Amino acid sequence: MTRKILIADDEPNIVISLEYLMKREGYEVLVARDGEEALAMIAEHEPDLLLLDAMMPKKTGFEVLQAVRGQQSAMKIIMLTAKGRDTDIEKGRALGADDYVVKPFSTRELVDRVGRLLGLSADDNPE
Image (cartoon, rainbow, N blue to C red; front, side):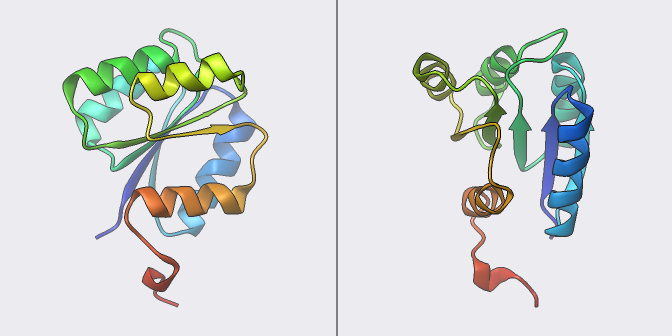
């Protein structure tokens, strides 16, 4: 079964690179460009994992995180943001983020973190 990932980020260059990266790894990819769109897509598509930027229009990533964790906790969430201060990381973790990655980031490390959260290992690749 193909795992579904929602990328919620308003920066087009980040979205393009993340979408390419995750599709290359075999994931089905959805994209939301603001917090309200992210919440609507989560309700409609029920992704397995959310890559969530903190700074987005309409609703921040922190607001999205809080709303999602208030409704359900099964979906894995990685905050992927330039907000790298200790207080931001603590806030993300306190609101229920499974992981917190600061931009700029290593694509290989991000792929590994996504795989770990989804319970996949390198041996699960069908190569």
